[in-house]
Length: 333
Image (cartoon, rainbow, N blue to C red; front, side, top):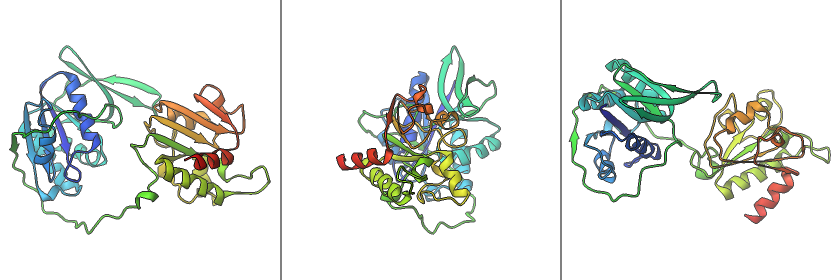
């Protein structure tokens, strides 16, 4: 088994997902080669020079400064061919999830995405992944080679704890196609407006109860927005939502303006992997809870002591008014 760890740089360094992929490769116990693409590839290789890789291949070109399908596929295909590897491990980043299926078609490889585990039995590599919204856990293997494997983030610990060195890198030639698009800049929300934070220690989920009539018979959507945004700012938590609050927006109901379908957690949303989770004003029904199965510590706030969270779906249930609890939390923070 000849293994290649295919990585890309981000802001002249290696993203966390790349270091997680390197950990996965080391745990296989087989020799491997590291290939890096993007500006600062040599400097990034120096950071992991003592990782145990047999060789380093790089493509350091300004054409790879920004994600672009044409240049990314050309560089990745060149690196894979130069390595001669039959197993290619890559991080399941947005950039590679878009480009590597095209690379597989170019070089006649097989590809599997969303892999959450790798094991070796004899000379056979087994990959584990979930299907049907994380309800079926499977182990797969392939006889066809090359085999490209994209690993989910948050599964392996990031590689680190070693001193940097001087990596002996071989530069791989690559013919980049002429670019047909121009990148004029990147627009992104300010740090205090960013609500989706994959690396946050806490996932805070808001349910539709925030926008319903409260005990005084009135709606307090503005107060809910202030409490939630203040908590997110003080705790650096990531914001999630239930499907019910997303449906309120699509149906023209009063909802929280800073929540979109991108925040949705559950069967029809995302399945995050934060260490801790706090659900508020949500009943804890199965379609929502299925998105919480990889949260290590689950807590919920609900006025109903018989809600779904009380049926063993949460480690701790606070039977309380979420407005009062979050107001107290913000005061303590």
